[in-house]
Amino acid sequence: AATALPPGQLAAFALGVRAQRLDLTNGCRLFVDPLAIVPTIATANGAVELAVPVPANPLFAGLTIGAQCAGVDAAGGVAASGALELEFGR
Image 1: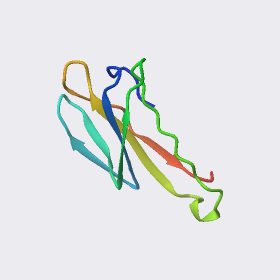
Image 2: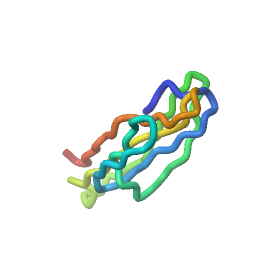
Image 3: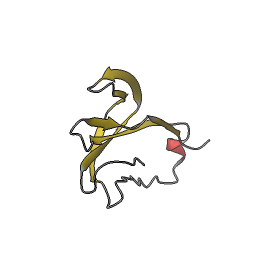
Image 4: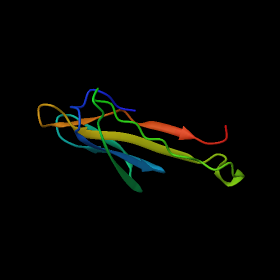
């Protein structure tokens, strides 16, 4: 989840299996090499969340996914969350 975006603001989650460090604007960094970009809209309180169902399949055991959220802040700049590393089945 990410917070502090303007209500109704477009944001996106980047999901990937490799890490990277790409400098964006305003000192923001993209830490996930995205395989998928999932758009979303900030709620009335400025939060965004992403729920991803994961099947109970042993093939996913040990899989590591990186996730990060970014959006446009109230000043018109880029705001990015820290990155999460999620490991399945541990």
